[in-house]
Image 1 (tube, rainbow, N blue to C red):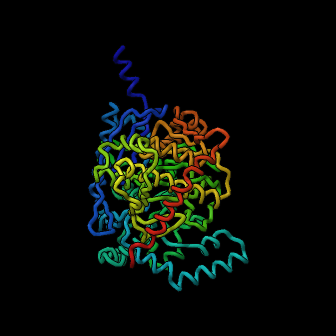
Image 2: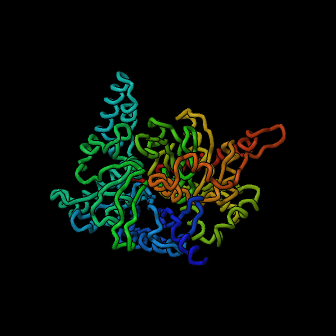
Image 3: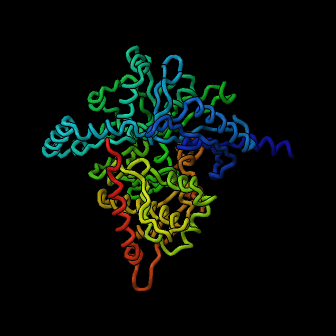
Length: 530
């Protein structure tokens, strides 16, 4: 009897999913009910070689990737041959370049938080060339009404996009330029690098969700932007081919895990989280609060053209169907909380919600979470992080409350920008990421947005989303409707109301605080001079 049970167990199949985040790499083994049967997490330490430079070691990342896959399978107590498919979710906009023949990287990963190209971005945004392009595009849009031309007339470069960090790398790393001249250079974001390593150099590819997040991809034409590459002298020859999000990318080389595992999905982390939350319908909103906050709305089959810094990205392309998202972000959510912990404002991050509730307000203290500048709708890479309104009466609890409030104030900013710009009726709001475990942040977000917000039991939605796409590709799950039915019981946060006052009461109560915070925000802007 025990032998037959063991054989039956060996026949059970699983989906393996790896999420490469900003500070960690984690792997989960999922069964058909989306239960996590095994997991493994390893820390990845960012490197800060100079002020404003944020890097990761490609070799360390690769070693940790292999370690978490083996560790998760071992933790699940299953065999590698029981893994039906592998899905990969990665942080976006972090890239390296490497030798096409040897696979050796020319430099560390330059991460999405890196500010080395800030001055370059600023000078280009103000340049006569860009002003001329915007003017011509504006005229052409007036004549043709093509949204793509409206986007060109509004284009503003950002340090979070790969484009100018890649220009910087091509300018400062001589071996990269030499490899380009010899047609021996590969460019790739983390997903592309991992595919290259997993297949022993046979696959140099990415998917539409990752490509569209680089700032070098034309989401309207669905290809690398030849115009931008020509403008910035970026060689098209170094870019990977772009495939569907749900695609057979090949199999892992058997020397790595002892068996070949089909790689059936590669996905950018925020888009993967959107898929993991089952935000498949137009108007569905997902807020991920991790190292940074990313707010995405499903805009359907057409990209959104923004005037305030929302970014149109490809959510996913599965078969012939493309789903687009409009995205706004705030770069320093979890970063601010970790910083506060490093100052010993608290010992355990789980204490912070109780600390914030222990005081009635922040005692006039305002915190501006902009270690990496300010993103939409203000778009100021030279803004500084700041604490204002400190008094002798200020306690640690007041400081913690001010920091947590700043996270929700940025949520409110992004949400209002999204409503104003897209004019799409919101159908639901789902929140995930590590910071979403904080009840104070969740409740105040619901209050300030005036909407119900849902927190899923599974917080690691990027991993689940990549698993879903990989599983659909091999028939492990059959439809998106089946995936919706697999969602577990969630925590619901409802806007607090007072009798006869309604939802607006909480916004009115916070109005003086929001006004003070906005003043602090303005004073923090354009702090760092060129």
